[in-house]
Image (cartoon, rainbow, N blue to C red; front, top):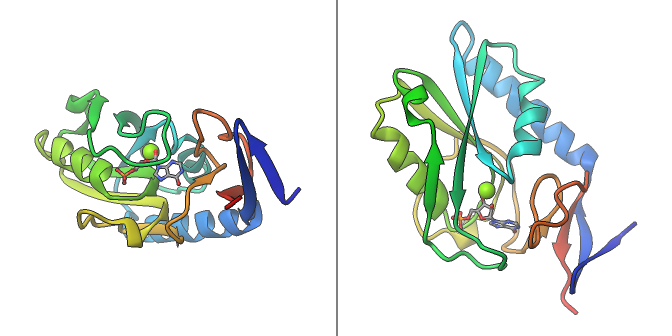
Length: 179
Ligand code: IMP
Ligand code: MG
């Protein structure tokens, strides 16, 4: 299926599940290499990164703790608002090697706010893994140590990413088709 209709919008196939799996495999190898002999605290940003982070988790070969963090910046729209509210059990980050797992870095405001908040709880180390990045949309510079793939400044759904809470279950990624 090349096209998907979600609510009022039409989306077109953009990145296949096979391409995604290859990128996850590569990222996992990078993490396994970089964290060999150490312990990791995966911080899953809800809800978008759930699918990516669990695929990643199953490929990791270092001891992993898993925590969640929720940062809402989007509402039901397709554009970033820049306002971010962050919820987590922050004390679980103290002294840990924190790896924040994001679905997509767009403006960068969400991940910047998350990193700022986490740093207040004195982790041993903090890094970011993101499945997708839209470098053309960046409003603030954020370090992404592990990246699945750069994409055009398009709105996408699938592989955990939603349009108004729909589309997260799609194994492939679709882009908003211009109609
Ligand atoms: P940022 O603060 O602009 O970097 O936005 C990051 C968050 O917005 C991501 O974690 C996603 O939840 C959401 N987001 C950004 N771009 C898209 C997209 O193309 N599709 C779905 N959600 C997106
Ligand atoms: Mg997200």
